[in-house]
Image (cartoon, rainbow, N blue to C red; front, side, top):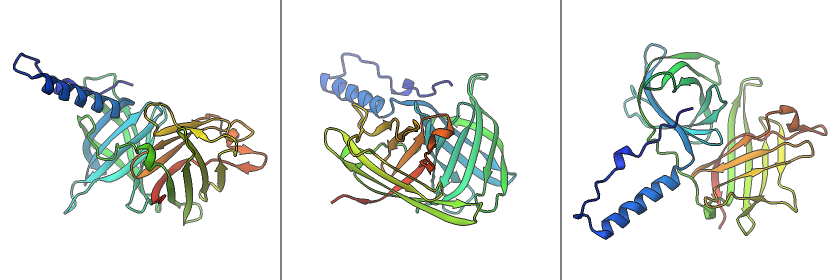
Length: 276
């Protein structure tokens, strides 16, 4: 994958006319921007249609753990507004879910992007699926506009992690809305205790009483939790401003099934209450 993040537009000719203060402020801006976006390994913005008539803009970035966050805008609507997209990169394709304001999945996107063969990235195949009806719209005439500028790529600060989070997703098998919740509690020294219930997966997972998760240094907005069960199941957890993304780290799905218990808690959980 080619990294499309660029700072060319931020270059500044440092001539004697620039004061030391202006140079200091600019350096701080570059550092802050780089720090906030440091783990972005690719970012895209495309415009085209779903099917022949639904005009859309699709804009997202992906971090070095394969977590993708962005937005889709339905350009033909009277008052088009960005709708959150969250998903993962599998190494070959992007799988992104479209979320309504209450956290319910309203669309499922699948994209294969070639960003190495040509001068600009192209979508080699793409589709949008209605999770309730299963209706599929193929992506057509998708034109690369540039790198991502989506407004949802904001990590949470450590003190804002603590709280309750809710999960909502439509289950086509039972034709019902499945729910779940997650609780994260700061435990001092950049550590977090967690408990997650996911009714779609029929699963439950909790940090060990003697082993809270440890936030990754410097950013303190994500963690990996290895050996979450006796079979070696592991997860990564990334905290964004309004939601948390839980992702499987182990490639073997059998590790999530352990001693007759299903521990898979992958998904997007939206923050509903902060600790007071």
